[in-house]
Length: 350
Image (tube, rainbow, N blue to C red; front, side, top):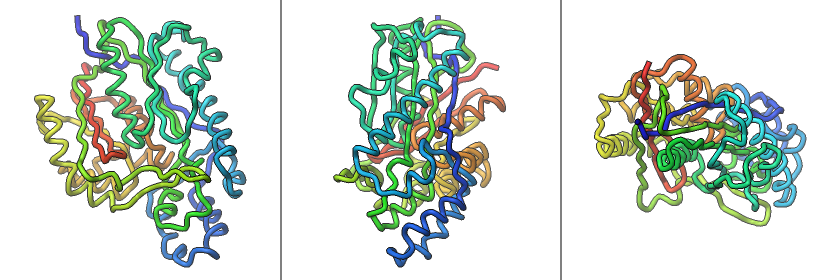
């Protein structure tokens, strides 16, 4: 019996409001140009992201008004609960299961605060059992899709035959700020969107795609690269260093190190499936992994269609890779606050 966790199903979901990149640039210009002299220089960021459109839980007019914690939190709870139910139902249906068959729920989210946590708030609506195990995970940011999959796979492996539901959900748009006139805030406004992905895992029986191994790397003295600041108005984005430069310099050796611990080498990987932080990050990933320019095509397509949704984004990329046919071995990778790299090796039997 194979006790490694298998992917039983995968689903993605987006909120109802679509924003075109030019529409967001115009809104940002109207809000910030008069107050922030550097805006015109930085506005080229919107055209250089490779993003065509993104999605949000609120209509664009909502974001044009200044919002504090209470309004942001209310919008988060409403939007996240709706998206959670939608994506979870899709994944459960694709696995030919009912919600009552789910034994463990892992919820990955870093863009809002909810206590009770999201899976508890939607348990009745979904039909989860009263004895379902709940594992909420906060603070992984963009690494959350891969790190969450790693956590969920170990939970499935620990109890063969049980069904583990992973939901990675982020509402990045709710952190938009009018008061912080910084380059980091303009970068965030040019990149981030909302979305959710769900995966069901089970160990102990057949499955074409299995979690072969997982790995993480935490760099020392890198807390300032990416994260949230917290103040009375809400979350504020932290981008203190040039992430593409860090990726180009440090990510390749980190992947080799993690693969070595998995008893694998870069030559064993047929396909890299990466979290696409933005077009510059994708290009840096290709350099770091010694890939031909343009290799990370699914990543570019996802960033164009949805923007950077933080944690779930890499699972949108995985969905495309599955549809088009996985090779024998893939490596999912993501980078996030910490500063952390996370990897999951997938073994696929055709």
